[in-house]
Each structure stands twice: as structure tokens, then as C-alpha cells.
Image 1 (cartoon, rainbow, N blue to C red):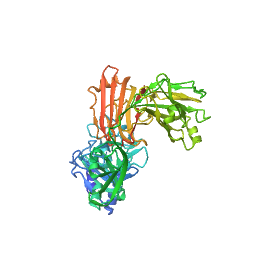
Image 2 (spheres, rainbow, N blue to C red):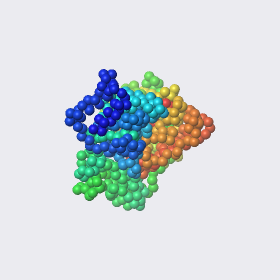
Image 3 (tube, rainbow, N blue to C red):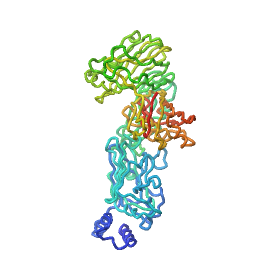
Image 4 (spheres, rainbow, N blue to C red):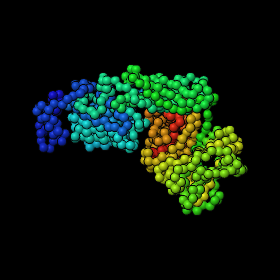
Length: 631
């Protein structure tokens, strides 16, 4: 009856044309709903929130929480009641997407907020914020607020169906629709940092109130009021890959977290304080160990009928490994003849030094005539005077005095498929000086067939103080990756990425580049994605003191620049050095020094990104209205 009364008040304000043929569709729909109500078709209200006198202020009245796992969709209907005497454009409702923590609790953070209204001037009348960008929203009802008195606000009244869709890979969609006004937020990537994770949704009203009519997902509040649930499985997140001997096990794994799955598919993230740890064999001795992690609580924290267990491997060491990696671009950028007629030993890149405890990383595209397995790239390890330690081919074969001591990876299972896939394959090569008289060469070859191929040569005997490498090629040619994006800075968001580069535990990876920007916005500069091998994200961090992702919330940004206008201008041609740090303890850092074209140095750091899996930690660069040239 409250809805009907509200409509009659509105009718008195609007005049006598409520039943006219020319009335908006939403009015007809409301007339039909009133008729149905008068005939006894009453809706069941599950609960309501917001003051019925329309006095609720912002962030004062909320719906229940609804947890939405990856791959699922939340669909719910709510009756929205807007004050008929107040057409202030933002006085409706907003949908908040956040982590699976209560508001105000430790670990709570928001991915973004989308409000039902939609305005032409998004800069002045912002109807969404956080990591949800206005460019991904559309609506069939565009408001143009003048003196906060746009009568289109009343079009939002009525039974609103809300959908949060996570069923499509690399997409995230929110829909709000009352049959007349439809607003859609559709971004071409998953909710930032939440792929594979549970997120929460809730509604917030301002100057309005709502009634929940239906939902396909039980709310957290209703769930907690019902039966308890037993744990059925658990996966581990983060944690160190190396532990210094004599470190208490609870201290060593204090950053580790776990995702527990309970009956009915309900999930919950728990911290190390909720877990029990054991290590076998002989935690007090140096060597590789298996960590046994135990969780024995129900969803509500009672003793479980049966514990769940997960494991991970790590090593107890006398001292932590300490490696430096540098991404380098050899010259010339194109090696060999483009028609793949390159003869044996006729073309080489420059000689590049690898210091003890250092890895050099090289990204390139391999082309081959496909005549034989060996007609692909080769890596030559030598001294400064070109005295050879080993020559290593792409196809599990090599030679040289230092080669005899190494262990090749074993080659491919299907050589014919591999050879075909190598014409255009994207390759990342890691050349490591272990500092103990041995070197390793590992290559990851992303074939044109979509398959990842690996080739390693471990334990090559070298002089650690005189180790260099260079590339050569036979029956093919190599193109080394030197830039990303369009030179005119027209590249759209997420339109181009570098190859995925692994950063091992206790390793600092350094990348040097020149940054070019359209200069339109702060974010039109380099962007770094931290992710696993399968590209599931830990965090995305920008050049301008902003980022997102499940692991981003724990980090400490440097604080940005003092004068953003000067910084933005100085970034057009800025020389940049970025360090990506895998601390080996379940945390990561990103540190950037930007040498601006104005002669000033600008700093941007993100310290303590966590949790990350130290054994599965990669990074890549992407662009947004910028162009990057690597050195």
C-alpha cells in the first residue's frame, strides 16, 4: 500500500495525464502493478531498508550482503521508492561491489560503486566511482540535472531487477532494469583483482527506501542465521618458498592465507591465525620440505567434524637466495634474414654480460623455415673475448666444454607440432649466472598453436666473473621486443601486453623503458600487471599512484606527486626504471623511478602487495593512451 500511496501523491503533482496513452511506459507499468495489487496479487517483502519518510542520508541504510563466486550470477528484485517531492538526481540507490568482509572490518575494501542514475556530464554528476569506469556504462535514460530537479529521476521508481554477472571469462557485467530504465555496466575484464575469488554486493540508498522481493543467492545474514556448514576443501595463497633455518614456523608463514570451501559451495578466506602448520621432514634441518596446513573450524567458527588439509613445498635454507633480473633488448632488433634464409653462424646479437647472482631476461618472436628442428634460435654462452662455454639450441641439443656438465630439460613430446608452432612463437629466455661457477638457460616458447613449450639447460660450467651471452639463428630470423602500444599513443585500455615474465622468489627484476603519453589523463602512462602464470591477477598498479586487485589493498603506495600537471607533462618521453620485487615471503613490491623531461626525478612505489604466491609470481606491462619503448 505504501507504493500505491506514493504514486497517488506523484499523480497529484504531475496533473491528470496519468492514464493518457502518451504517458511514459513506466507509468503504464506502475498502473498495471496497482491493478494487480488491488486484485489481491500482493508481493512478498523479504526485508526493507531505508527510512520510509525518505530521510535516509548517504551511507546510512544498506541491504543484506550477497556473496558472488566467480562463474556465478546474482539476480534479485527490489522495490525502489523515490521521494516524489525531491528530484535530486543522486537520491536513488547504489550497488557496491567489495571484498568478502563486513563494512569497517579489517580487509574490507571496495572494487567500485554503480548508481542507478545516468548523466550526460559524468565529470560533474558522477554516477559511479572506484575502479568502475564511466566509459563502460550505458543507459536508455540520460539525465541532465538542472538545479537538481530532473523529473526523469522518478522514472527509476518501481520494481528493479539487479543482475551481477560473473559467468563470462574476461567480463564483468552489472544490469539495473525496472522495465523502463535500463542501465548496464559492462567491462571487458573481470572485477579488478577478483578473478577466481568471491566478491560481495550490497545496496545503499540515499533519500529513498527499498524492499527486497527476491534473490537467487541467499544473503550472508540469512545464511548466518541458518544451519552451520562443514569445511570440505582448502587452497593456499601466498607464503614463502624459502625459510631461514631456526625461524619459528608460525612466524615464517604469518602471511599465508587460505580459501576454504564449505558445504553448499560457500567459501571463506582465512588468515594464518586460523590455521595449524606442520612441516616434514625435519623442519630444523636445511633442505626441501612439505608444509602441511590444517583447518578444523566450521563456517561459524565451531569445531569441525573433520579437518581439511592442504600442502605446499618450500625449502629451509641457511640464507635466502638473492638474485637480480634485468629485462634487456639485444641489438640489432632484427636478427637474420626476414625470408628465413639465414646461414649458420652468419648473424649474432651484441655480447651481453651477466653478473654473478644475476639473470638477464630477453623477449622475442622466433621465425623459422620449418625445415629442421635446429632452424630456430640459439643461445651462445661465452666470455668477453667470445671464448665459448656452451651453444644451446631451442630443440634440446647443445655443445661446448661447459655443456657436458649440464642437464637438459628433455625436449618436447611432439617435435613435428613444436616445429610448426615455432614459426611466430613468442619466446622468453632467462640466462642466469648462479655465481658458483654454473649457469642456467631457460626458455619459454609460446607456440602459435596456443601451447607453451619449455626448454632448460641447468648447471652449465662457466667462469662466473666472465659470463656473457648472445643470440644467433639458422634458417630463420628473430625480432626482439622493443616497444608496446601505438607510437601515436592511441592504444586503448588493455589493448596490448608484454610477454608474461616470471620473477622467482627473493628476486628483483629491473625494466628500463621510455614512456610516451597522450597527456590527456594521469593514467595514460605505463601500467604493470602482477599475476600468476595463468594470468589470474594479484594486483594492477599504474604510474600515477593508483591500483586495484585482491592483493593491492594490503600495500602502501608512495603517495603520488606534488604537482600532477607538471608530472603529466614530464612523462612524455620520460626515462623510467621499474623494479618488480618478489620478497619470497608472500609479498611483492613495485618501485618506479621516472626521470622526467623537465629534469626532475619522480618516484612511485607500491610496497607490501600481498598475498602473492612466491613460487608463481609474474608480471607484464600494458598500456592506456601511451607508448612504451624498452631498452
